[in-house]
Length: 307
Image (cartoon, rainbow, N blue to C red; front, side):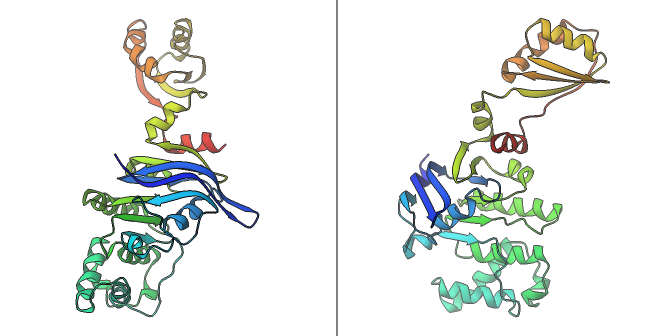
C-alpha cells in the first residue's frame, strides 16, 4: 500500500523551540489517529502537511509532492483547524459559498456544493438560516467539517474536531468520517479523546517531545512493546488457588488478589490465551466469571509510551 504522507529525517524548529526532531514515518490510506500530549508536535506536523510551515531540515511529501507553496496539491487536501475561526454574522451557506468560490468552484455551483457539504456533515437544514455565531460549539464543528470536505479532497486533516461534541455527537461524527473513508478519502485526525480514536482509526502515529514514539496499527504498536507485561484481570470463585496454579505452571510473572478478582501479569499474552483452556481444565472446580486484558486499550498504550 503506497504512503499518502512520507517524512524522512524531518525537523521543524521555531527559533530555539523544538517542533519536530528528525522524525521518519509514513501514513497510508484510511483513517489514521495522530496522538500525543500537548507540546508533542502534532500541530507542527499538521501545519507542515498543510503547507503552512516549511521544514527546517529533512523531507516531507504528500501524494509524492512537497505541500509548501503547492496550490495544485493543496486543492487535494481538506483542513479543519482546531481554532474556532468562523464568521459569527454569516449564515453557513453564505460562508461556504465564498470559500468554494476561492477554491475554484464556479459561483453558480457553489450553493449546491455548500448545501451538499452541510448535509454530509449532518447539520440539520433547519439551522442553515441562522448566523454561525448563534450556533453551539458542536454545530460550529460541523460547519468547519463541511468547509473541509466541500471540494471532495483526497486527504482530510482534522485537528481536535470532536471538541465540544457530546457523546452522541462524537459517535455521529465518527460515522461521518467512516463514510468519508469508504468514499475514498484518507483522513488524519488529531484528538485527545482516545477511546473514540480507538474504534475509528486503523492506524496511529504517536508523538512526544517532537519525536515519533510508534506508528502502525494498535496491535502492531502493542506487540512491539516487549518490555512491558500485560495486565489481565480474572474474576473467579477462588483467586488464590488459581493464582497458585498459574504461577506453578509458569504462565504468569506475578499476581495480585483482591476479593473475587485476580490480577496477573504475563509477558506474552498470546501464549497465555492459547494455553488458557488447558490451564482452566486443570482447575475445573474454579468458576470463572470474567476475563479481560487491561493493557490493550489505546489509552493504556499511550500512557505507557509517554510516561
